[in-house]
Length: 147
Image (cartoon, rainbow, N blue to C red):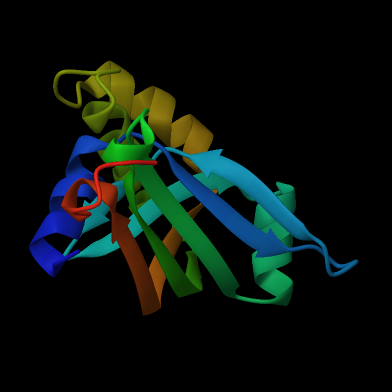
């Protein structure tokens, strides 16, 4: 997929699956809501979550977004990333408001919603997924037509 096609995929889809490495070496997979800022995926999570603890220990994560229900419709992107954890409460609150707005929890950030997000932000961290490598697929482009 082209960079533009990946951008459209990220804009259209709603959930990214994030894989981190647990302390026992096993992958830990969790879904996240996200936003894209300057071509970079951002999410937030509770600071005490397993994924946050895993990323504190090892900042590598693989994230994947995919779409389609039939084999000939499948498309997706898998990004190898290095994650920067952001702890600034105001920045995390801004990220939370942006995420909630994207997912229709608020039409625009009202003072009431911002207060609720600010209360959550003290317990959360922002995750900036800095892409290092990408793999994509789009079965709609396959010419075989039979699966």
